[in-house]
Image 1 (cartoon, protein in one colour):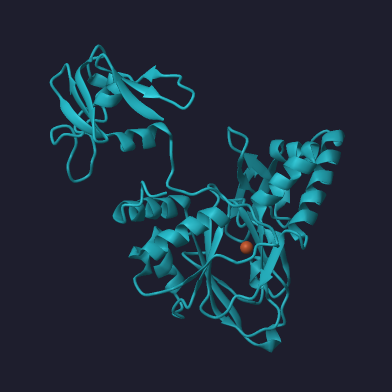
Image 2 (cartoon, rainbow, N blue to C red; image 1 turned 90 degrees about the vertical axis):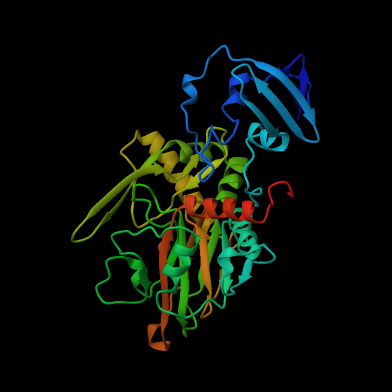
Length: 369
Ligand SMILES: [Fe+2]
């Protein structure tokens, strides 16, 4: 894609040569002189809806990757063509998703270092997070609340009714099965919340037991497998909204959603799965028959050795995982063997995306991909 000027009008030329003229107002509202935008925050100092709708381009020239324009209202501005094309292409700083299964050769891993949050290593780790849906940070300091510091250094922690953070260890009378020593089958966390927490951070502070292995499954890879091999069952899982519910002594939380939610362009947006908390509505028997068949199949796929990876979180490991994409679980363990203590919290996607864009700008990485 490139930009050309024909008789003072700016044209966009795409690969199939279907040229179209870029509206002068579209360009005018992207002009950034000191009078037009605040130099400290890049925000407009005027309302672009009030610009003259008959505004035109008076003069235009292209030189060394810059588009120089003078508008009929007297505003002159030099645009970086790359910036315009980046926006026109609707590019994102995030690299393409890589679907994975149990044959994934190497888990995305980063060695923690002091001040990592301001480094290119952090940028690469966040790219890995978006590619694979998870990253493991090794050698993270063993302070009890370090996971909170970690979360707040990427973005802002997302508190819930479990508090700012939660302690995953076996306790008497737990309000969630996570706080026991039994096996947890693959699930996504908190599908009953509005909105559902995006990212879970789990920091391992003690792990002396033989069991208690962590499990992860790429829910997007499973969804794509279903789409390819079981179209009908895939369809019913993308069309049936299920109620998820959490109940304890002080709160009842509910939200509805599909086990596989699609984007407008049919790619997978989010998966939800929690056998402890799901309540499908009373649909026609024939529909429910299909739904139950599909749910059984997806449960078996999530639990299958083809998709699941298993590993032991070591003391000092911090697992960061996308709760809208990955399922997680753990094998059972015997609490009499020793301590197992993980501290967890949630953050949202705007934290990681915001940090990624910030680091991209800081290290001038926008054009290097
Ligand atoms: Fe969980």
